[in-house]
Structures are given as structure tokens and as C-alpha cells.
Length: 241
Image 1 (spheres, rainbow, N blue to C red):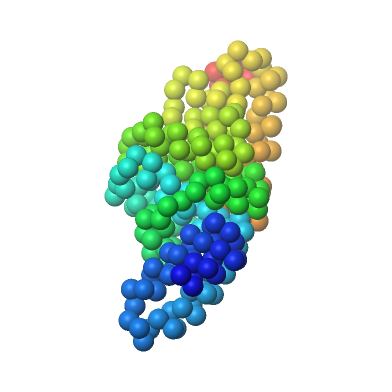
Image 2 (image 1 turned 180 degrees about the horizontal axis):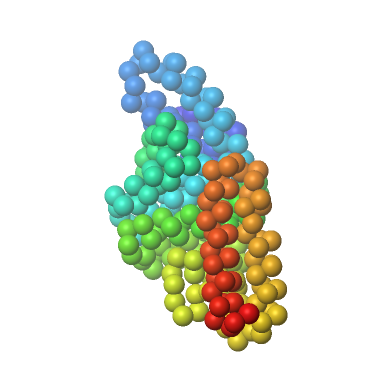
């Protein structure tokens, strides 16, 4: 309860979710350990629940997507753990995953959480969140309509437009028009429009756009940026540009 109150005070609905998760973790300790753990939780709540924090935003939205089809699959949980281990190191990943296991059992107001994230995170950072969520949805080999619908809802609440949403989705689902969707254009456009679209996407998805979110997020953005370049190269080869 105390940790939950602190979380709300520090950062609205995101902080409340984090605070309750920390409080549940503290409750697993013996009474003699709780005071020291509570002091640590207060510091952690303030540290993690800064507005726009990318890491905690990932944890909360991942929980929403995993619960979308009513089943928490091992492959999806492993995907979250591997991502955090890769980006933040084993120790921090273990701490984050302990929080995640508490967060996933909590009721989450998608609209409220996304409104807070939207108010404090750049458009480039929000695009990176959607990119990660599609990777999470595909981690078990299949993507349910419920998962697609919930990611679409999250994208809408984060003010990600349909073209950006389809572009990111196309990076995971290759089909005949895949490369054109990545560049947010139709196959019927002329060569000059292809070039303009590529320049526009370079500006939108360049890793430097998320530099303020840390090196680990920049690495994820680099993967997406390379797919934009790959799509352009494929179209150039197709058209002999």
C-alpha cells in the first residue's frame, strides 16, 4: 500500500502499477527484512517511475500484450527476459523480470498508461515501443487477432498513425507488398516518390532520434532502421534504380 501510494505520487498510473508491484515483492520478505526492503523500494519507485521511462513502459505494455489472448506463454515471457538481459545486463534484467511477474497480475488501464507515456516520451520512442511489442507477439511463432488488436489499440492511444503502424507490422510479416508498406507507399508510385519516401523514413526512424533514451534503446532502433534500408534496396533492385 505504501509503495503503491509513492508510485502514484511520483508518476501517475505508471508509478502506481510499479509501486504495487514493488509492494508485493516486499511482502514476500520476513518482518525483520521489510524495513530495509521498503527503504530500497522507495528509492526504486522514484528511480523507475520517472515520466517517460522506457524500461518500465516496456514492462507494462508487454504485460498487456501477453494477456491479450488470455494465455501467458513461456515463449513470450522468455522473449521479455532475453530482451532485458541483452539490453540491460543479467542483474538488471532479473530485477526487471521480478517486477514484471508482479505487473502482469495487475489490472492495467491501457488508456491511462498510454496517456502518461505519450505525454513524456518522444514519437521516436513510442515507435520503438510498438516495434518491440510486435516482436513479443511473434515470439511464440503465431500472432493472434487479439494480440494485433491490442497492439493497434496501444498504437492509437500513443498517437501512432496507421501508416506508421502498418510500416512496423510489415517489418515482421513479409508479403508481396512488404517492402512498400515498410516505406509507407503503394507499389504504384513512381521512382521519385520511392526516393522521397525513403528519405522521409530515414528521418523518422534514424537511431539518433532515440539517443536520449539510452544506448540499449538505440540498438533496438538500429535494427528497425536497417529494415528500412533493406526495403529501399529491394525496391531499387526491383526497379533497376
